[in-house]
View 1: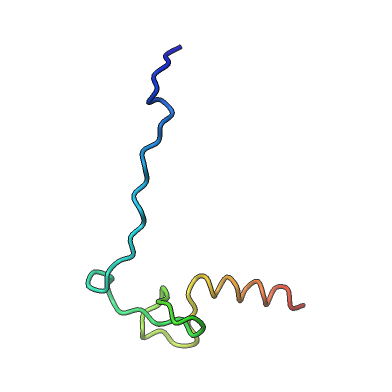
View 2: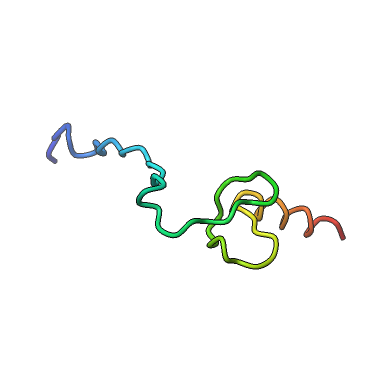
Length: 65
């Protein structure tokens, strides 16, 4: 068995960087609850929610019987 010390060492992950407004692509709609950018373009119809608020709303509606 080889006792190489680097066998189980994982490289440090680079921190996830948010895209800047210059390279983010088309402008995104704001979440109607927290005003964070959503995954939807500004032209999207209806109440747009960011992934976090959408997940929280799904939990609320599922538990509201």
